[in-house]
Length: 350
Ligand SMILES: Cc1cc2nc3c(=O)[nH]c(=O)nc-3n(C[C@H](O)[C@H](O)[C@H](O)COP(=O)(O)OP(=O)(O)OC[C@H]3O[C@@H](n4cnc5c(N)ncnc54)[C@H](O)[C@@H]3O)c2cc1C
Image 1 (spheres, rainbow, N blue to C red):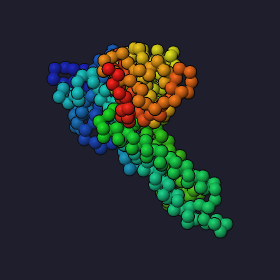
Image 2 (cartoon, rainbow, N blue to C red):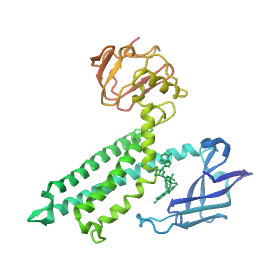
Image 3 (cartoon, rainbow, N blue to C red):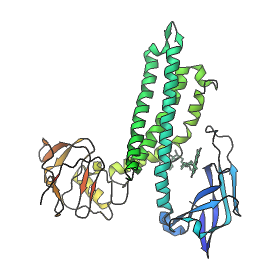
Image 4 (cartoon, protein in one colour):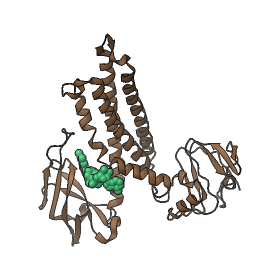
């Protein structure tokens, strides 16, 4: 990020530009992130609301996009724009946090949009495959066509469930960065795949503007890029699983996966920041059976701790137990975190 905001009395002076902004040329207000402290990395970013017409604030359209023709895209330019300090959102240096929160909402709408595209492709393809006949049979009777329809069904159902999971967490007021990222990645990739398959089901008509299927294809491409490219979401998910990154809030949501094996546990501990885990720690997969080292079974050293002896279990390896669980719990010397789906089957040990 190169845009800067320098405080001078009651105003901030903004300089810089940002390309690829949805509705840049038509919106009355723009939420702009700029560096108020360039040396402080992400902690030096602040958020401002700019108003159309502010001297030095100009916009331009981006021409000839592949898709999303119904919505404009453009560029914002800031040349010594004087932004009143009261137009700052949150506190100075809080911009990154605000942007990340915004992404949790924006990515969610993109994921939901992806589900809509898959459903449209599926419905149109089913209708066409039942109608169109070759060699005296509706094309839907052919297994190769059924293969394409079934892939759309899978993409639709799995994307919808991931979106619903993120929605449920939002409704509960829970941080949902991981779940929203997963929904966005999967739904947008599935939407593009569904649009590709829908063209194939429609044959040459899929390729023409007459049936409107090619529009789904063009419109499904950009969502794989904006609100975090697929590569960024893959990186987030992998780093979370590996224990290199916390998602869903400071001190919370360390992936249970990264507790597999002592060496990895140590790595995960060191990345927990304020919530340093020491001693016995209990971590469970959502909805999975999992091997729990037996020395963690009587969970924790703290007075408020709980024991795990009411969880149904069966031995899977020497020193380990396996338990079917519906959520996960992390208990440490200084903190405990319970996943939303965790079913409380623990009994107090003291
Ligand atoms: C139609 C449209 C509307 C948009 N609207 C907005 C908007 O309203 N507001 C806004 O702020 N932005 C908007 N964007 C911009 C969008 O968010 C960016 O294009 C997107 O984040 C990717 O950034 P980039 O284009 O600079 O690509 P780059 O960051 O240059 O990425 C290029 C390639 O390198 C990969 N890559 C980059 N870094 C890494 C990494 N660390 N690890 C692995 N792979 C990496 C990417 O995945 C990609 O494949 C919009 C874009 C489009 C197409």
